[in-house]
Image 1: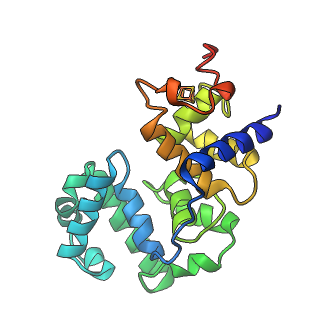
Image 2 (image 1 turned 45 degrees about the horizontal axis):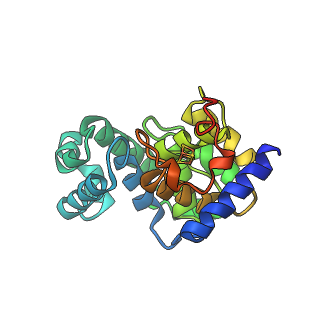
Length: 220
Ligand code: SF4
C-alpha cells in the first residue's frame, strides 16, 4: 500500500468517527490571519481571549496599526509571546497599509494559492502553518495545515519520517492527501489527537486505525 492509499484509508476511518467538517469561509481573512498569529504556542481559549481583548481595546485594525507595539503586546498578553506576536501584527499591518492602501486582506480570495502563500509567508512571524490555516479556514482552499497534533500523528502513522519538521511536513503531506480532503482530514486529525492519539498516553485500545500505525507496531 502506498502512502496515498494509506492517507485515504485513515481519512475515511476518521470521517466515520467525526464526520467531514467543512470550513466556514465567511470569516474575515485579515481577522483569521491575526487570530492565527495569536494561536502560536498557546491554546484556543487563550488565543480567543487575546483576540477579544485586542478587539475590545482597539475595534479596528487601523487603531491597532496606530498604537505603539507595547500597547498591542499589553492587550494580547494572555495569548503569550506577546512581545513577538505584537511585533508581527504591527509589521504586517504596516506592510499591508503601505502596499495596498487599506487594512483589508479580502483580495487574497481572488489570488492563486501558489501566489498567496509566498506573499503572506514572507513576513517574520507568519510561517507556512499560519498561512495554511488562513487559506484553508477563511478562504476554503484545499491546503493542509500541520500543527503539533497533525505532525505527531503523521509520524506515528508513517505519513512522514520520524525526524520530519512541521515545515517539511507542509511540503510532503499535500502530495499524499486526496484532492478536496485537506480540510476535513486536518480537522479530524486534530480531534483524533485530542481525544485518542494523545501525545503522552495514546489510547490505542480505542483506536480504529491501529493496523496503519508504526508506533503501535513498535516500529518507531
Ligand atoms: S494506534 Fe495508538 S499511537 Fe497509533 S494512531 Fe492509534 S492511538 Fe495513535
